Image (tube, rainbow, N blue to C red; front, side, top):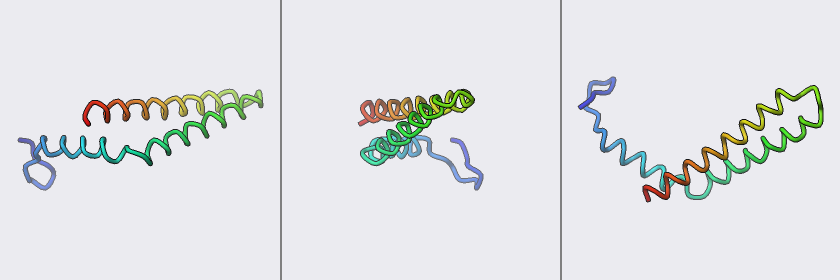
Length: 84
């Protein structure tokens, strides 16, 4: 068994079970809405920055952020479906 900083034994199975519980129950409704809203806002920002030719680098970053949030949403959804 591993120990944490206070010297107590850390139960990996309990940590794993708590992580699975959080993935399957916390990601039910609110988190996907927040992730989709943030991704939509970042993509909208990228489109707005594309209109200004001098802001290509910022637009590229905003687009990457939007794709990262959609990817995170897909990963959380897949984990919820697998472990639920």
